[in-house]
Image (tube, rainbow, N blue to C red; front, side, top):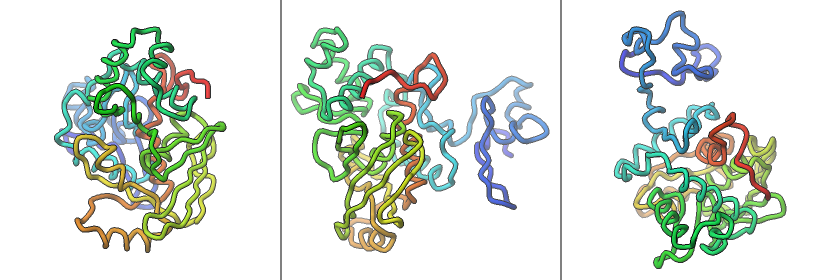
Length: 310
C-alpha cells in the first residue's frame, strides 16, 4: 500500500468479495491488516487526512454528514462511476464543495420536503410561510443553493423549477411513493429518491431507443430493487457536465430495456458519450450514495432522516 494514499476498497482475489473499511477506519488496511496503514504509521500514530480517491470527491454537507455516502457502495462499477463523475467536473466552483450554512441547509431540506408533499416545486411564498422567513431572504438563500447546483430557478429567480432529484417538468422518469407522483431529473435521481425519503418507490420510464415501458420498484425503504420489468433493464450514467447537471448529464442518464438497445443508442450519438453502463443494483448504489445523506440529521446516526411528512 502506498504511503501517501489510503486504500478504501479491496477485492479479494479468491472469492471476489469487495471489502470496505469498518466504521471509524480510514481504509481496509486499518480494518483488516495487522498494523495501521502506512500514512498513519508515518504520522506517528496520529490519524492523517485520508488521501484515498473517495476522500477527494467527498463533501461534508453538514457536520458529520458526507456525500457521496461511500458506506452504501459495494460494487466496483458504482465506485468507478462516482469517481469518474467527479473527474469530469474539474471546473466546478469551489463553493460547491463547501458545507452549506445552517440557514441554507434548513431551506434546502424544506424545499425538498414541500416538493415531495405537494408533488411540485414550492413557491417562494410557500417556502417563506414554512420557514417563517421573509420572502426576500428566502429568495437570497435559494440563489445561494442554486450556486451549489442543488436546485434551479427561472431566469427571473422568482420560481424554483427543480431541486434534485425532482423537477416540475415532465422528463419521462416518474417516481411514485406515498400516493404522490413526481418527475425525476434522470434515472439515477429516480433510483435515489426512495432511500432519500426512506420509503419504497415505483419508477416508470421508457427506453430511449425503442420506447418500451420500463418499471422498477424498490423495497426495504428504498435500499434494494424489488422488481424490474423488463428484468434485463440497465442504466446509462452519463458523465457530461457543464454549468449544471440538470442541463448536461441528466438528459442523457436514463433507463434502457436491454444492453443491445443501449449499445444501439450510444452508437447513434453524433458525439461519443462518456459514461457508464450500470445494472439496476449498481445504479441504485450510485443514487443512494448521492441522495441518501440529504435528510440525515447532523445530531443522530445516519439512518434517522430529517423529519418529513409525506
